[in-house]
Amino acid sequence: MKLSKSWVIAAKDFRTFRKKRNVISSLIVVPLIVAILIPLVISFAGHRNGQNGIPATELLTLLPAFAFFYVMIAAYIPTPIASYTIIGEKVEKSLEPLLATPTTDGEILLGKGIAAFLPSLAAVLGGSALFMAVMDLVTRSKIGYYYFPNWNTAAVMFLLAPLAILFSVELNVIVSSRVSDVRTSQQLGALTVLPFAALYVSGELNLVDLGSLSNLLIIAGVLLVVDILLFFVSRATFRREEILTKWK
Amino acid sequence: MIEAINLTKRFGNLTAVDGISFQVDEGEVFGLLGPNGAGKTTTVRMLCCLISKSGGEARIAGYEVGKDPDSLEIRRLIGLVPDNVGLYDDLSAYDNLDFYGKLYECTEEKRKANIQRLLTMLGLWEKKDVLVGTFSKGMKQKLAIARALVHDPKVLFMDEPTANLDPESSKTVRDFILDLKKEKRTIFLNTHNLDEAQRICDRIGILNIKLVAVGTPQDLERSLSGRKTVITLKEASKEVLAALKQLPLEDITVDGNTLTIGVSNPEEQNAAIMEAIVKAGGQVISVNITSSSLEDVYLKLVRRTDS
Ligand SMILES: Nc1ncnc2c1ncn2[C@@H]1O[C@H](COP(=O)(O)OP(=O)(O)OP(=O)(O)O)[C@@H](O)[C@H]1O
Ligand SMILES: [Mg+2]
Image 1 (spheres, chains in turn blue, brown):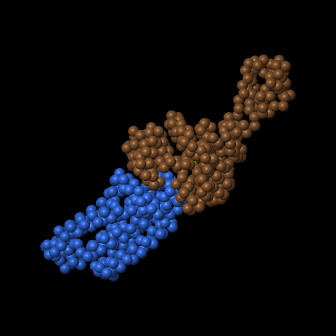
Image 2 (spheres, chains in turn cyan, brown):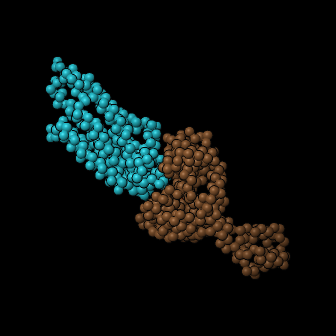
Image 3 (cartoon, helix red, strand yellow):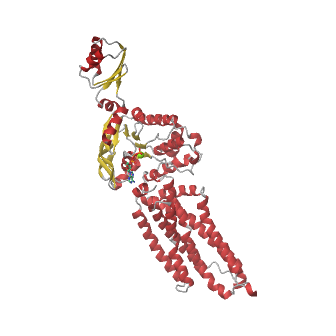
């Protein structure tokens, strides 16, 4: 397997993404809205009845969960772009000439993975950085210091989010190379959020302590193993023939 | 260069290609001619290692089709113009070709040189930076051909390269194929255009799920036994027809004063025919020998296998 070939495929996809407005907006819109909306809600909440907003003690229990929120976003963001990398080729019927080149399944899958991973990572990191900056601005006066960044958010941004993106990219690539239409692919792909949403809710229900760095690291470790397994699964389930003949 | 032995493809219980055997030599242009659904695309896809075969064997340049390490070698060696061009509409013509050049691991120099040469030959060099999405069908088809050639393949597979093209673009593509032939490339061409097959192919295989016939266009024409002699008389009288019936001729059709006579060997039989006509008092206005066309052969063979 040659990394350089995967990179050629990824670089080609980057160039085509630039022309796809819906792909770009799918990357930008959600992180941007979350980064602005949640801090706004936090700053306006609790102002009714003459109260002075959410008290600092409560803020300190709310904020850690928001870090994990970005893991959920990380799992959601790659769905459109990852399924587009495969489905786009199917729609343009460009898979046949591509598969006729001396490129292996692994090289193609890795290339598609990189093509979906890097823009998603950029979107999640950019979005979370913006989120932290705005949140700091909003909460500083209450809690007296800049809450973000901290070790937990570092673990989320540089470990959990990338691994969650990878998880989502891999599942989406598997799904979109096997289904025969765009909508099914997107609907199934969106399910990748579920495990993370479940974790997030468990966190809110105090079933899991997502504020604990060691817990985050354990989750990251599990995710890493799953991601590695998924790559082999995707390679084993990639059926050139079906991809060519089952697509209408 | 290309060899198939009993090559078979089944989709469920539908047999798309049934035990075909043929051989294509290096530098030869081989045409696979057949009606819609005959299995042409399926055959090419099997040979290009895109779909598996259900039975039989095939080899390209000695590499085994369907064996894993060999299929990578085969793909390195071949170029494919698929039935759907499958170009990237959001990339320029140049970038489309460059992408493929990179996948074939051509050096930058080679890519540059080949892309310029191919685009120039096909009259697309001025459009090299234009997005392919704006191209006409003919331009896309030509670009797909250029794409299949970026890496200088020894063997080129083309699936109906002139389908959907206007006569002028078809001609450009055909002339281009003839140029490629001069470069000693082996070309495997799918088509349902008889005229095209006749003009550019060294040998033709007629496919209708099974391979019905293989040979040079001339061989095939000759294979439909005999040719026809068309005679126009001043008057096709009963006496003349009666006289002709005495001769060992295959069949005679009369249309007004024009007789079309099936003959297996016109060089010898025509003299006897003339003699018989003249003796019976007939006056000959014109005599023509027509050979049965490839079209006749094709239609006859395809119909025979259909029924
Ligand atoms: N993926 C598939 N699944 C099931 N049947 C298929 C599949 N691909 C092709 N076939 C069938 O195999 C037969 C041969 O198809 P093929 O596309 O090879 O014909 P063709 O000669 O290329 O025809 P055309 O001139 O229309 O391009 C057809 O009956 C077709 O319906
Ligand atoms: Mg076809």
